[in-house]
Length: 403
Image (cartoon, one colour):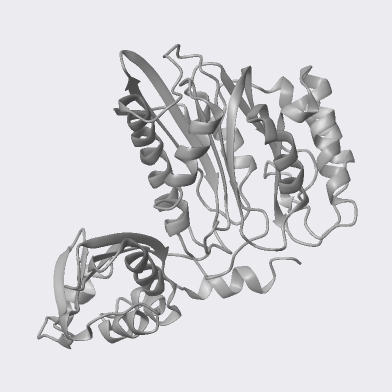
C-alpha cells in the first residue's frame, strides 16, 4: 500500500469539481461541490446521531436505500436544517443534478453544511449545477475547498492497494472544524474507490471503520445535525467483487482505515481556533468500550484542552477526566505521560505525581502535535482519540458565526 495523489479523483472513473454559486457572501469561497462516477457505484453511508437532522440526510437515506449511487452534490454556507422547505430543496438538488447528468435523481447523494435554521433557496444551486458539471475533472482540491466552512485547511488523501492481484485505489476528502463530537462527529466525509465490493460488504466495512476513526474525533463536545460519511465503489479496477469476509475484504478495510484515520487526524488538528492536534492513547483498560470512553473523556475535557494550549503539564486534569468518564478504573495504577516531536516525559505513575522537569514539559507541549499517553494496568484493551486544544480563537469564531 502506498499514498498517492488525487484525493477523490485518484480512483478510476471518478471526477470532481468545486465552484462558487452564490450561497455564501464571500465570492472567494467555493460553495458547491460535485463528485461523479462514470459507472454506477455501490454506496454506503453513516449519519449523525443527533435527533435534529438536516433535510439532506433524509433524502440521501431514501436515495441510497438500494445500495447504489452515481454522484454526490454538496453545498456549504447553509446546512438546510430546520427549514420548512428543507426536503423540497434537497430533492430539487437531486432532480436538477440528475437531469443534467442524465442519471436518476435517486442515484444522487445530497449533503449540506453551514448555518442551521437559515432558509436555503434553490436558485443559486440551480445556476451553479451547470457550472460545476462543466468544471468536472481531476479537481479533488476544488471539491475539498467547496465543502469547507470554518476549516482552514483542505483535507484529502488517496492510497493505492491490492485486492488479490488487482491494483485498486481509494481516496477521500472531508470537512470538519467545529461542533465535532461523535457518533457521528460534526463533519462530512466523501470517499471513492474503484474496488469492486458489494453494497452490503461496503456498508459493513464503513460501519466498522468509523468506530475507530471519525467516531473517535472530538473538538468541542457538540454533535452537528448534518454529519455524513459516504463511500462510493464503482468496481472499475476490475477485481473480483468482494462479497464476503476474507483476505480481499481485509485488504480493502486496511486501505479504508488509512484514508479515514488520516482524515480524522486532519479534522481534529484543524478544529476551530486550534493550534495543536491532541492524540490520547489509553492502554491497559478492561475492555475496548471502556478505553474509548476514557480516551474521549480526556480529549473532551475543556480544562485539559486549555492546559495543552498553554503548554502546561497539568496532569491532574487528566486524572480528573478519567475519574468522571463512568468507567471502573484503579486510580492507584494510572500512569500519564506526554510526547511530541520535542521528546517525551512521564508526569504521573501509580496515580501520583513524579518529579519532572517543567522546562522539558513546556518544550514537549509546545509542539503542534501532542500525544497524551494513559496507562491503566487493568487489562489488555486500548483505544486512541483525536482532539485539539481550546484557544481564544474558538470563542471568537463561534461568537459571531451566524452574523
